[in-house]
Length: 162
Image (tube, rainbow, N blue to C red; front, side):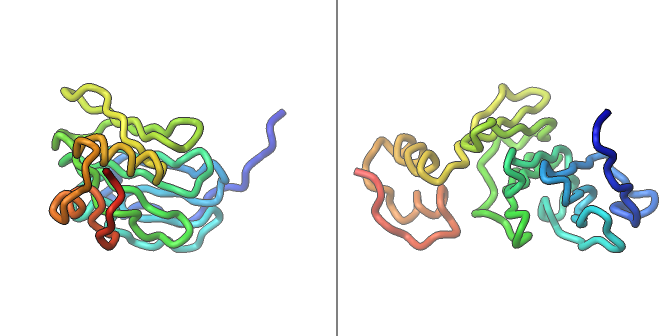
């Protein structure tokens, strides 16, 4: 027989506003839903603008529970650090269609993103692979400052390709 989990108490959604999107972290310590995040066994939850003003359409925790991916109905895709509850970088570039499903690879290096009319997308989320991916998209030449702003908007410019 499996180990019994303590019940969740409190409220993760605003009454009448539930979107049906809910995720429990692999460490079993965080619950996320409707732009709110709470500790397991919580008495109150913290409001976060997880999709920058839109509605959540998909949620997934990384296998280690350190990262939360959040997809929006307007195609917004962001990563969040679950410890600091801060975004990790800027939004990912997407085709703009509603994101319907999210899944991390078991090794935490890739995020898979699915939508209704968009083929399955693979996004590198490991910093080394992300840099390699950005350099490959730029033709393996040094990124210009404008390209850096597109691919790495939250980090100071530095030469990494070519």
